[in-house]
Image (cartoon, rainbow, N blue to C red):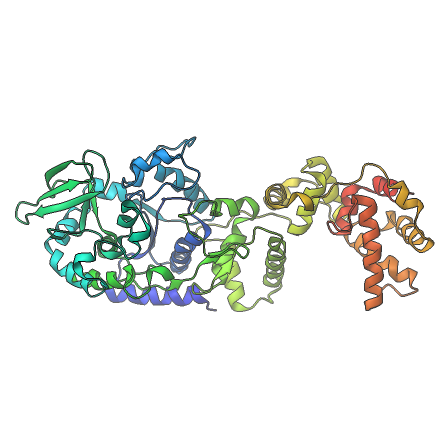
Length: 561
């Protein structure tokens, strides 16, 4: 059997054998904790994770490196944050205070930590690398000195992609619409070109801590680097011992490819356009650093129930941690495993999540019965376990939409919830809520956080006497037929047959009669009557679930028995 993960794993193994036979295979991804790390960013991690996991399943040594770009500059103050944080623009993310009220020591850790927790729940194993630690500990010192010696060659490569004259290249094309700090953040231009020449290294100021610095001179022999800062400070340092700065992004990325020996790393479509970091990096990694560009696909964006492309620079975007509050980890893994990287998809936070769960449960039944297509079977296998271990899942697979309905009606009351679940299938009753966890917890959380207030279900406390007294004889008869058979049909399947069967009996039709437009209309009219008498509106949770939730005694009372 094969799928897109298997095919990429084949390519990665072959490429690794060509480059470094017998060595550990290196897959990589990178995340910037500049803001919420959202579900679009998760694809940056899940794509190499799935490939690395497949390689490990085959018994080969493979590592997934996850670089935290926490030494990147703080670009702007997000909406909702105290404007005084503007004084930190230009500092490394690890040097910026965390948002007000945060328990974390800095801005980067505030956004990294929830993602680290989510990745653990998703079964993603990786070797995390803090770029702050890499740069400030001198790990990249030789690479930095090499890049400075080769600055003219780097400049020549970058010049092939410049669209403006060199004298204007310091200003990004969008700079007119931005302040100076924001424009400086767009390192796609090469970023560190100064009046004294091009320099691929950007120091952080020793006084203000920001990167609003201009390199004014550099000596290859002594490695003395002089810079001035917009704050008015200036100094000369020896780059051979200086660890307070970093290579600009278009140079930093290919340097890391060579340093880490990365064989596989995917890129978002925004990184793979002509003149992008990925394309320019492909030249620099070989011409300057003596390495090779990783292989890897472009991956498409991930949406949220019809929302446009997500951007972590804007607040309020759902994160993996948010998704894992309302869905089990295998389901979220499956969404990334089932689609090729180039295919976009949406993660549902609205009612669509119920349909998604129905699809997932149907797939599980097909896999159990041996009826699933090969690619679907592989996607399922990658979702429910990794090379190392299975992921947590519920022992009893009660449909998510049913659990949501139960959570809606019971408002999370455990005794009521267990009573209803026990009555779903009298032949095999659920006797412990632990059997339906964690799915039950996810459905309850979805109802509490995502179900609009106007769609919440409130069961009547007393019968609607006015409505009951005004019913015609056909409606009274339909309620009698339901109530007379209620006890004999008190299970999920039984009540399903009963509520659909009452209009058939009234029409003189057999229980197995096929639905006609007339019969469907009669059933709908009957359902509206039940909903109105039970919850005071013409729609609600599925009627069999609702009847179980309300309980036989209360149903009889509200239906006028």
